[in-house]
Image (cartoon, rainbow, N blue to C red):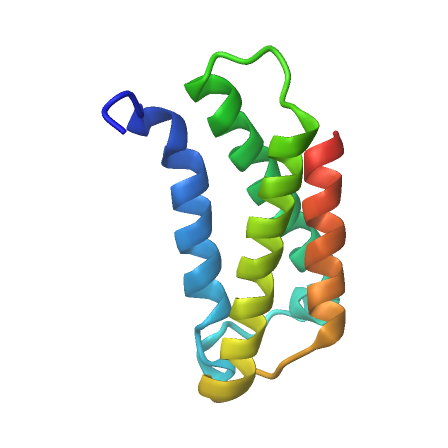
Length: 117
């Protein structure tokens, strides 16, 4: 573990923290912006960026010219599990937020897209 360079992982760490914060903020505390009605697009974008940052951190840390399929599969599973957990927490613990299977679908599509681009 001593060979891990934190600088390569700062973007993904920041993005995960931002995603947790925004996802677990009660609905009545979110700004009233018409753009929220297109939240599936936001889900897709957020998880695309998360996948790109995850892929980048691994390629930089291990000096890979390209990322292997197995690593992409592991990233997909981890980010997907994170997405599902966040959605469950929204449905169970957060006032004004609800579990939405279509949010998960948008997250999974964004995750996949971020790993293949």
